[in-house]
Amino acid sequence: MINGLQYFGRKLLYPVFFVVMFVASFGLVSCNKVQAQIQIPAYNDWAWFKDTYWIVPESGIYSIAHNPSNPSQFNVLRGQTVFHLTDYFNGYFTGAVVVKLTQNLVPSCQYVLGQVTPQGAVYLTMFNANDGTITNEPIGNMVLVNNEWTMVNTMTGPTNNGGSVSHWAYMVLSKPGDATWDNLPFAHESIPEFMSSCPPGPMINF
Image 1 (cartoon, rainbow, N blue to C red):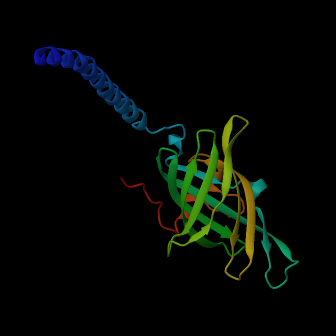
Image 2: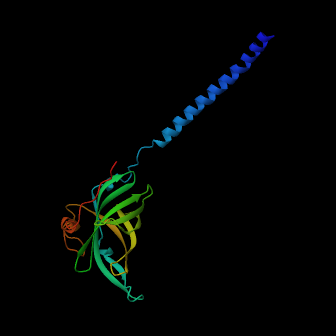
Image 3: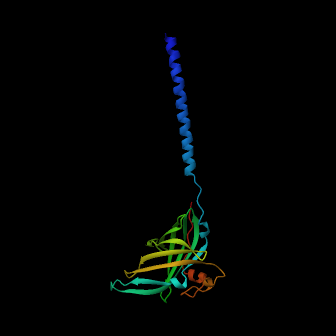
């Protein structure tokens, strides 16, 4: 009788053992699939951003400043902004930003951390290059104009007197040999001269 029970018990255990092994194997395969899905390589659609210069063309040099001492006063300013994008990884990019407003051309030195999606949406965070505080957070889109990429950014940022400056522009690429490389709209300086008052852009660390 005992032998019969042992034999019957073994017959029951065999399928259970195989089911357990199958579940364990399936779980291992599933885990491997999850790991394979997680280990997706970085996307490089916009990797060409690295070491590029973006400027404000003549049509975009105008911005609007709000006067805090007179809430109904909005004044037109002119200026130039140059981005030197120094690094890129997986849709993130960093760089140096120099802004010069009014005829005094006093430079504002900033760093930028940007994000660009596969669809071309752009999100920027600007940091004061001296103390690291966030100065503004522009948003934009990559837009093809005449088969050339432009970065259409909009922003409103605070000013030292408690007011604000609002600006948008189709920022365009500039490189050595271009007319704008040697003579920036409004600033009438070369890009190297324009950028020389501020520190170089940061890199992305691993």
